[in-house]
Length: 129
Image 1 (cartoon, rainbow, N blue to C red):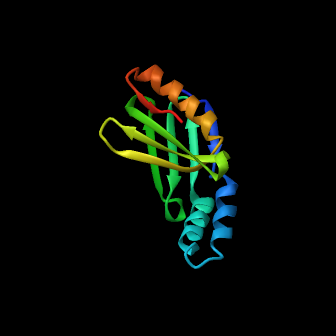
Image 2: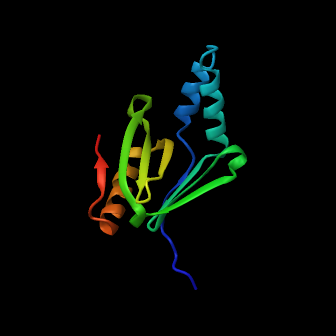
């Protein structure tokens, strides 16, 4: 019998990202941004538990990344959409990065993730904003 994980957050990108990019899409320059936002809205899903961060995305939701907190060495958050949603970039010990785009409640989720990472790896570097 496995250890159960407590899910803290599960969901997709903030709806504001889609709305803003659709509005920008009315310009020719904004069309690629709109397509990206639609793909994110359809297939990007975040799952943040007390043990790991899972991100499912890509075309048709075929790509999945799982990170355990002890592998994280740096977290940076960037507000978007007037601070209503934001992006996070998580850097792992091996130097690879995972970007969480248009994440809702990003300040609250950043604090939660940072607390879990600090408990597992006290030498973590946070890019506080």
